[in-house]
Length: 161
Image (cartoon, rainbow, N blue to C red; front, top):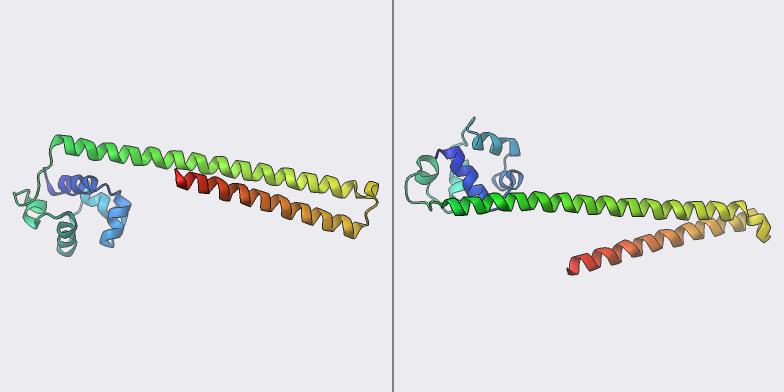
């Protein structure tokens, strides 16, 4: 196992994405990727920071010598499963957000169509143009408030779970 593999293994063991790991080191995700695929090496200051963060010696990180904690195949497999779970959670979250946006757009469209219908038929109700416009604006405000309340309550229930 070389330094690139040890960096990747330690990052996964600490359940960090490349982006999260890069942020803790003050570098880009691309830098972490290039270290992990062996195309570049981190500088000495970054290696020292990694050793401190992971609780291993620089000898272990660079050369693989004892002083750091060797991981079993089972621990490595566990860290890979954690990465897959994070990816699935992110996809699920994106689908839920998309569903909420569709609901929001649908409710907004229904509110606007209803308000426009009221405006078109305002003369039948004996309303002046100003009264009809005010009624439409009030309808849109009420629909928007209802949508906001729906999303606040929906997010509150979700956060409690």
